[in-house]
Amino acid sequence: MTLTDPLADTLAHLRDSSDLRVWSVIVTLMGDLTVMGTPDADASGVSGQALGKVMAALGIRPEATRVALHRLRKDGWIESTRHGRRSVYHLTQDGLAQTKAVADRIYGPARAAPAQWHLLALPPHAEDDGSFDALIAEGFSELMPGVFLGTSAPRTTPEALHFSDPKAELPNWVIAKLAPPKLQIDSDLLRKTIRHLPLSALHSLPALDRAALRLVLLHEWRRIALRLPDLPVEAICPDLQVRALVHEALKALGPLPIDQLSP
Image (cartoon, rainbow, N blue to C red; front, side, top):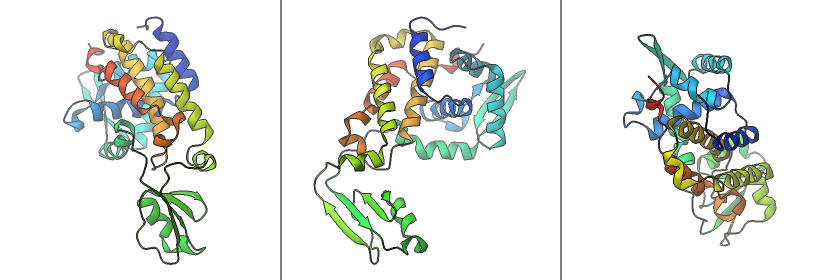
């Protein structure tokens, strides 16, 4: 099965600008089925035939798909069951747990700019007493060794130097540290690509086209979203503001029509 033009050109552009590691694409697909598919997440699965059609539409060879499936089984991400002559792939309980742990970062709304920022400088020995891990668990990000930025006052940290700033703006060097230029460039490229799509007509595309486009858009967005810090930098950095546009495109495409790709 082949894709219709000009969708093939759009997919080729996204594919060339992204890092399409086959195993990661499969994780994106199966995670999407789990989060946006059936209410019973454990029942979400994809047949080998349907998976092969979507991978082929992205220019991924069957051999590469088989190698990736083998790796994911070996690493405990997926498992397979037989239904007659068909293989159906599911996330394992561990794969399901990891998928749910990051779902809000991918499918959730952007966070608003904070009322104020909190900067914490820890004493040199702090790493040994678990203070670093405790602050990260509270949503702080490390700007430089021993210096952390957060959006709420931290729990009591002995000997820490604590400052707060009511301004929502951050210096450019801080934004660049939290969201490196490559991340901002990737976000901008994805935004420009989506803006060239006829969003109002996406629902009428053939099933394979919708599946391929949804998967490649979601995969590129997932790569971006999981590199964002656990801080609301999207709210204050225009180059990172692509989340709402991605969600609009995904809504226009609808859920992955995997059931329409199997006989």
